Image (cartoon, rainbow, N blue to C red; front, side, top):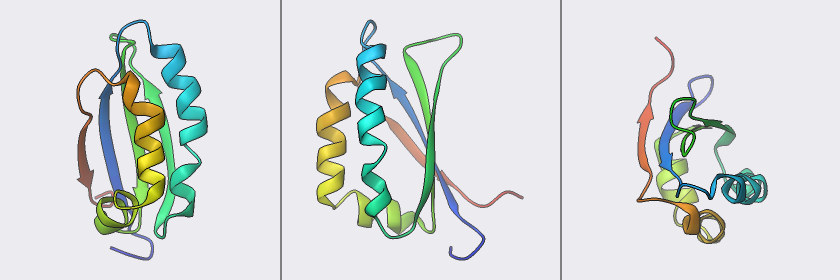
Amino acid sequence: MTGNSPVLEVAFIAVKPGAESDFEIAFAEARKLPEAIAGFRGLELRRGVEEPSRYVLLAWWDSVENHTTDFRESPQFGKWRELLGPYFDGLPQVSHASAPL
């Protein structure tokens, strides 16, 4: 998809209990990394209310490939995982959604 129909990446991230503050500090640095990738439109991170060690990452891309190929195969993704990976409690669960209906 291109133009006015971005793809929404939704990632559910479990963080090791007690590491939430460190994860959020690392995310403040990591959030700049996708900006250099073609097709990146923006992102936000939300912390769980009922489960404060769980986060939802929302990222907008022009296409799924901009995320899965352009970003994940870039040096920026390596740095992203280096910064955030130590705080993960298991791998994030990631899916993509189409434009709003």
